Each structure stands twice: as C-alpha cells, then as structure tokens.
Length: 164
Length: 277
Image (cartoon, one colour):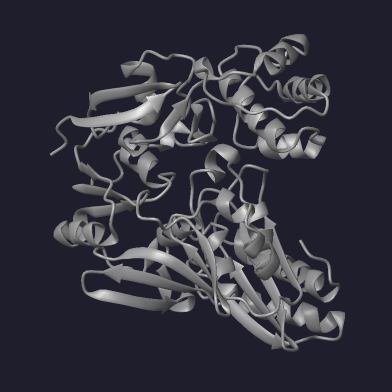
C-alpha cells in the first residue's frame, strides 16, 4: 500500500528529492519534512487560508494538496518569497495582525492580488481575501495595510517569485 | 496526516489512468484540485485504495470546438475566470464563476469538473451547467460517452459516472449569448449557497435552473412573460416543482422551499430588465 514514494520538486529555488508517505499533505511536507514553519495549519478543510503558499506561481491552500501532487512542480513558501518587504512593512504600520497566525496567508494572497491589480478597490481586496480568515477579526487593518502597500508600490507592478 | 493508506499515482496518459481506475474497482478516486477529496481523506470520511491525480493528463484547457466550448476536467476556476472564450461565449458561466467563494487559494486549485462530479446540491456548479445544457464527457476502458447534464446529476452526491469512469471534459453548447442572470442567496460572503438561480433568455423563452433547492438541479422553461403577475406565477410554479426539498446545516426543512419564489423572481426579473449579474 502506501510505502514511501520519491517526491522530486523545487522548493524556494532548490531542488528537493525526498521519500514521503502518500498520505502526507503539501503543508505537512514543507513544515514537517523541510522545516519551513511559516506556512501554518489552520483548519485542514480549505476554509482558513493559513496554509497558503505558491504552487507553480499561484497561491494555493496547501492543506488541500497531497505532497505527491507537487511532483516536478515549483513550491514557494513565504520564506522563499521576495518582493514582500513593502507589504510586510504596511502590515506593521497598519497593525494588520494581532496573533499573526493568518499573516503568512494574508501577505501571500495580498501579493498575488497586487500583482494582478496594482491599485485594488476595497471590494477587490475583500473579494481576494474571502478565503483567508483572521480569527482576531483584524480585517479593517488588513485591508488598510493592503491599500497602503499598493500606494507605496505606486504604479510599479511586481511579481512574487522564489529567491534564487 | 491522512490516516488510511492508499496508493497514489500521477499518470502521464489517459490510457494509463483509465487502466488504473478499471483495476481499482470501486476503490479508485480521481483527484483534480483536491478541495473535496483531500479534506474527506483527512477526516477519514473516505478510504480509497487508489488515488489518481489528473494533473499530467493535459486536461486543463478551454477550447472552442465548432459551436461548442470544451472545458477540460482539470481546468481550474482561475483558468476559466481568466478565459476570454468563457467571458465572450458563456457569460452566464462567467457570472457564476465570479460568485464562487473560497478565494484565490481555492480558485487556483479547484475545478468546476470536480465540483460537478462531487454533486453537492448546495453548490454553484451543477445548476449552472444544467441551465447551459452542458454534456459530460466520460471516459473508461469501456469507451467514451457523452452524458447530458440533466441525466448526469442523479441525486445528492450521486452522478451517472461509474467508478471506473473519468470525467475528461465539460462540453457546453455556446450559441450567440442572449440575456442572462446568475443570482444566489447565501448567508455570508464565504458560505455555501442556499439557493442558486441560473436564468437565460433563449429564442423568446425564459429558461431557469434552480440549484440547491432540491437534491438535483431543477430546470424550468416558459414563454417570455410580459407582466409582473406572470413572473410571480412562474416563481410559484418553481416552488411547486420542488418534489423533495434539499436541507443541510445551512437551511433546515422549509427554508429553501420558502425562499425559492423570491430567488426565482429576482433572477427572472434580472433577465427581463437586461441586468446582467
């Protein structure tokens, strides 16, 4: 049955080759096998967005992905993301978090939004964050932080990518 | 980690995938985005022997084929939301897709094809596909067949697809788009729908498909009404057409039946008034 299987993928710019159990989730692979603890486990049902990371350049909820589905694909966690400093600074300036558990997912989701829509409206921001829950209910500050990051970015678009 | 053991495969050809499914009896599962299957595995609600990942089968695209639009089974919500073909030729589908909740972390993973195969009554996808007259392309070692949407949804969480069959594509007839509206009632931005209404104006008639009201989508069709009284009568007919009401944790007995006339009337009025959702 599910004996260990080889998983080859790229994580944060480095090729990874590990034996994993087919039952392992992608979020468990990055946290427990690779030790990248910034990606969180919240709900295990795809509701909360704490496990957000990038798979082939797009944000996904990694509790919904089997680790072996990442075979030959590129995984980027917040540890390997560049170009986030202004968004992070904006979250600090606006107090865009209380406990910080959801912040990884909020920031990566905000980065994808700003990449596609450099000057999002309030409604665009709320729509983009519909799958990221903040249990401290800090949404107003989070939305303000994303507006601030957009303003600081000016008209310059930017991409989330792995740090090479 | 998931409790029960299973074998995972990510085949490179459809033939290989279908051989694997055929060999698994009823214990094979197809995984697209994983948003339904993975939480079920984590919760121990499903314990397959085999999981077949369709990510390498090249089923993720949207194509125009003659008068149809063919949507691959692995095409994600994000792919369809970004598709010019969907926007131009299937505006009702585009309107439905814009209303799906879950956020980009879900839209980049999950697939309408998977949602259709899951056949949760309280979902956006089944009702919209029935309204659009979609057909489901099912492949197995036994061959390929095309199943019309009204025959595909057999009951709550039950479809015409056999365990050895894989959905490879949704085939949507795409004539010149007419007026359309997608309207749904839900309690919060992130909640599953209570009732959905997909409404189209086609050749002087109004086609309305209600989702989530009953275990399977409910399709009705009338000549275009000319009075508000006629719209109200249509809405009452929709309510009367519910043989078995769907109930779940979001809406208990009587709730959906009570709200259906209002939802139906709003969708019909939106089409008549040329408002697009």
